[in-house]
Length: 196
Image (cartoon, rainbow, N blue to C red):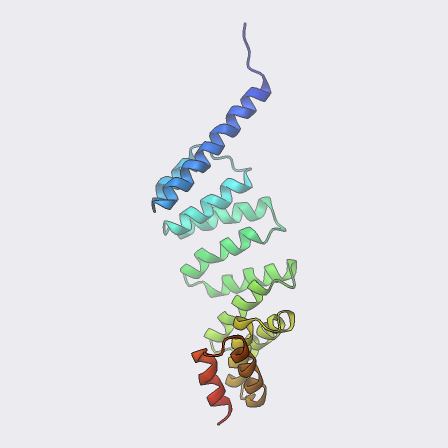
């Protein structure tokens, strides 16, 4: 009697998974997100971080936000210290307008990675867009402290200072932005307001 070795079975399983991922990328490139997700669902194992992460993304792109959340949450459970699935997890919550959950997740990322400027910047932007300038400024200051010539961080730090009435600080920051991007319309406008 001929039997198949565990190695051969494992290799076949991997090749099927690899093919499913390959097909999903091809379908995603065509904008067929649901079909791309179906490729992975056909070989789905709930213990696969990569598959859960990818299904979170594909469902988000397909507009299936609740299903996306389920897969991203599973990926987080499988890799609790990874920032990657948390950034993905944010997207469907943002699409649903659940800003409290988005803020909570960004804060979790910063607990794990205190110098993650991407999380700082986006968290600051959320607070800024909700006119909570006193909260926004602390995140933009941290970005500017870590990346003193970063355009995005400096610009939002400048605008936060201006919104809080700190015109002197805002003027200096807008000038730094203009050293980075000399014709930046937002910085030119902000500088004019800061010097009134």
